[in-house]
Image (cartoon, rainbow, N blue to C red; front, side):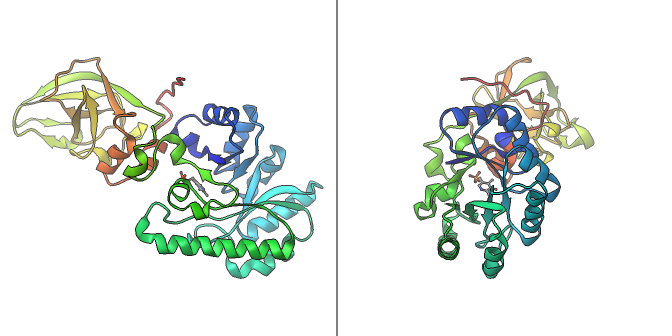
Length: 335
Ligand SMILES: *Cc1c(COP(=O)(O)O)cnc(C)c1O
């Protein structure tokens, strides 16, 4: 199993999570960019690290810190071969990325001969051959996903036959793991699932979000009918209401889209909707019907109020909300 710890382990703490995953037996770690892998190596991580989206200017970091690059195009493959030759390195482990339909990164079916010829010189060890699913969480697209699996399967079988190499084959992200057992191959790459989200109510019930995000009520106001609240008078009171100013804003990842009554925070087990415009450092919520005091803790998301529900209130997904949590929020680790 490859555990994906890119983007600060989905907004948490990449090093702490990666050390823990290594300890409990993850086979591989996955990051998006080489610099993320360097951080993990500097923290003492020993297990293999796959860099999913390396750039030629960072190939030096890959070889220096033993990070296995995904080679996804002719340009990066040729640059990487040139790079390892310059270093007199042989058998450097890499993973070849095949585009089975996402059309984001990867070699096309008709690059097969080029690929086989280009890797034949032995400067690389083809440790993995992989692909990525476009719609594994969307069962309306099941037919498309099955096609992606079939394309990857036939490309890899052909590759194995032609080269005699047997790389680790991997195609599934979290929803691929959950919905498509036929796409497990020799390894799976789980990201969001590790952090407690299954992209589906059926799976969410069996997963536990690992992170909670809290803030504080800093001030309470009575806003009278006719008065306004926040920047640009974003909210105008039609009747007298009670509001609380909360210590989190768009600089922390609670974007302006959560404003104007769409998003909410949790105070004493009740939803307090965000009024008007979200500020950089704070936001204001309606607490007219909530019993609470200044200084009290507010929940943005936790195990009982999962991030995906808040995210869905503004039409986005858990991934975007949790990975967007800013650096000003202190990450506190608990066991
Ligand atoms: C981010 C990523 C994953 C993990 O996806 P989840 O949906 O979070 O499980 C797997 N593979 C690739 C190539 C990725 O970019």
